[in-house]
Length: 167
Image (tube, rainbow, N blue to C red; front, side, top):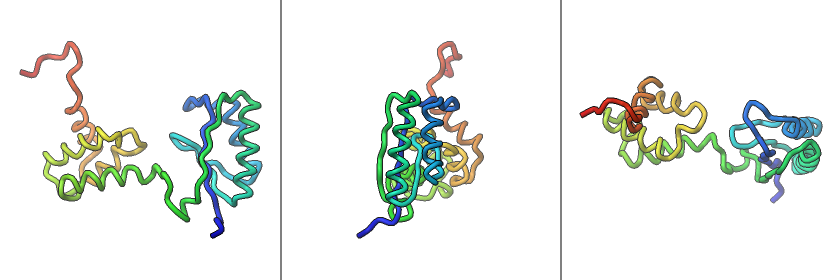
């Protein structure tokens, strides 16, 4: 079966958020020069297109990044997300929420306050709140404000040294 579109995820190192450096800029421009608009995400940059377009762009992107000072270029290929879902971080939160709902026996919005706090604890332990906009998304699913989610998270944190003993 022929693949109509392919997806490449890449990470150009070193990468410092907010300060991409000339090696990252060169990589992004090489993708654009090949007619592909890179989607810069929190963990990798993604391009999607025909096999020829993506492989050519990856070749040019790698050469441009290394020539501009990159210390490493990591690349992963797969089918386009329209053909199959492959490691999509956009689904990570939904998968974590579904697992917690199954464990606790109900949708987040139907849980008691105590169970909502337990859900926040489980999601936090699994790294859900490291994902962008996760606090807001979980709050919406629970029917509570993001401030409530932050309050639940703060209640999980151990007291700071010097804090008054709550006993």
